[in-house]
Structures are given as C-alpha cells and as structure tokens.
Image (spheres, rainbow, N blue to C red):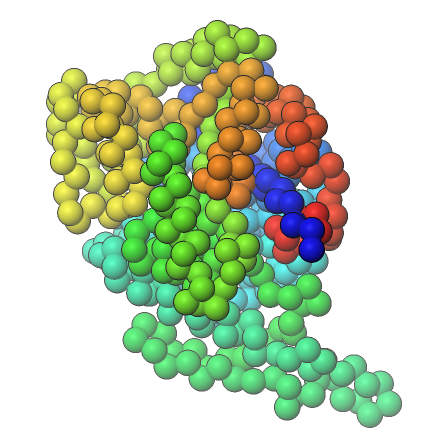
Length: 432
C-alpha cells in the first residue's frame, strides 16, 4: 500500500494591530482590532492563501502600556459568526476561557457556530491566568494552575457531553403526524461533578457536519494530558531549538494511544513570526525597525503578563532571574527561560525577544529561506504545521501568502486548493 504523504497545515493568529507589540506603527499597517473592514480583509487574505484556520484569541482585561490587543479588541465568537459569511472555505478558531464561562453557554455558542459555519469552527480551550480578569467577574483571587486545569478538564467533558446529547435523526419534522423531534433520541446529561452540575440536554440539534473541534495550547503536564485526551489542534511555543521541539512533539504524540487515539488525530502547530525580505539583510532591517519601537515599560508589562510573574523588580541588564515555582504560565515560562539561560541573555534581551512575538519563535530571511526552515521542521517531525503570526497586517501577511505559500506549494508540501468543506476535512487532507 502506498504511504500517505503529509501536507503542512497553516493557521494565522489574527490581530488587526499585528502580532509584534509595535507592528501597527509600520507604514501602511492596520491599526485597529475593532474595525470590520480590517477583519474582513484579513480573512480574505488567509483564504486566498488556502490556510486551514483563521484564529482569534481573546482577552478579558484592558491593560494600559501594553500590546494594543490587550487594550481594545472584538469578542471572537460574534466576530467569527460574521466573518464566516465572507470566507466560505477557511476554518475558524475562537478562544473562550473555562475560568469565566459556564459549560452550557459555551456548548450552545459553539454548537450554533458549527451550524452557521457548516463545520468550520474550533473552540480554543484556555485557562485564564490574568489576575486582573478576576476583578471583572466578581472574584478577588486567582485560581492556582493545577486547579484551573482540573476545572478545564471537567468543563470540556461537560461541553462534549452536551454536544452529544442529540442523536442523528432526532429531528423528524414529520408534517403528517406533527412530530418534530423524536424525544427518545434526545438525552439529558445529568452531570454532577466537583465543579459543575449540568442537567442538559442542549436546546439545539446536532449539526450535520459533526461537533466542533477543540484547540489547546497548554504545555504543562495537566495541559498536555488534556490535549492528548481531547484536542484536535495544539498550538505550541517553541524557541527555535530543534532538540527541545522534537522532544515536545514526540512526547505529546506518545500520550495519544492510551486515550485510544492515533498520532494523526492531533495536529501540532508551533507559533512562528516570519519577517520576510527580498534579501536576508532587508528582513533583518525590518525586524530591527520593529524592535526600535519596543520600550522597557510596554515590554516588561507584556512579558510579566505572559509569565504570570512580575519581572519589573529585577535589574534589566542583570541575568534572567529564577522563575518562582508558582508562576502561572508554566510551560510558556519554562520555554522562554530555558532559551534565555542557554543563550546567556539578560532580562533586557529577554523582553526584547518576547515583545517581538509575545515569546514565540521569530525567523527572518527571504521567502525561500523561510520556506526552507518551515519545511525542515515539518519533514523532521517537529511540527505538523505552523501558527503564522505576522508582525503587522496586511503587508507582512500578504508577503507570506504571496511569496512563501507558493514556495511551499511548489515543493509539494502545502495544498493547492481546499479538498473539503469543513475544518475537519482540512486537517485530514493528505494524499492516499
């Protein structure tokens, strides 16, 4: 039997103001996260590039002196409902926190989106670690890391149980008998757990395309277990070290069999910010210009927020401090601090790097050089695809779609056209 050929998967992390903290300051760059024409233009670029997924994160606080997206942004699920009418093939991912939501509400929202998008929706399951967010939800204390994941695990089980409460064929619509729903095929959940008590069922039939997909990004032990058990897509943080990336990739895939899953059932997509130029020097000059706008104030705030630990108390030009054991964003912090120590970075070096892509991997070069790097990681078994995080929009994203994507297509590792109609189809597209 002929071996199946893998195809790379691509998602875009959409922020109208760009993924770099100062991307919106570039000439001609978009400068709003709350503008419909900007969002519409972004999803059209992504679909032109045959991307699997258009991804919208979320924030529940407005923080001064920080990335623009932390001050002003659209709510993602309502935005996706509108964008799905603009782009008819690309999939969508939305972040909703398990720390500040109820399972019944989340199940209804994403079941609705599965109907409205005709199977092109995924829920990004996050456990919010921002202390300021608690003050917006009648709380005063943060929940510790491991308990947040215990909540998330039960939350996901309840949501999936609600999605599966209606059998196929439950809606009869028999005009002669007047029977609309066969109630014998609709089942209450009757969940009684440590954190949630939910009777169910949903007041919504199962979508023809099947239930929504799940996205996860936690790299801690509880996060990886949740990913292995339930996620279809995992976004990971990498720092360019291939040995670390290989260990993380293989380690996560090795967890799947005990949950009755195969390696291809989960798509792992590291985040990467590509800076593209006609020459390597031109790309580097573009990165240097972006970095020239980074200040200690906004960078330190951003890094502290991402780490769950205030680093402003340490000297900027001193060594990177030890990370406290109770830091909230554990996997992200470990990756970032391991890289800093390996490279003998100062705290200033660290915040400069983290501000560039919120701690994700930054690469620069010509379109062919960018394609070389992505192909190497993909074919070396370090990734199934990538979450592309353009520094600014639309220019940096146009460059990737118009210059790098054709390189990947010529090499036979990325689709020429969409082969199916749903996000699940996109993720399973391979040659037999």
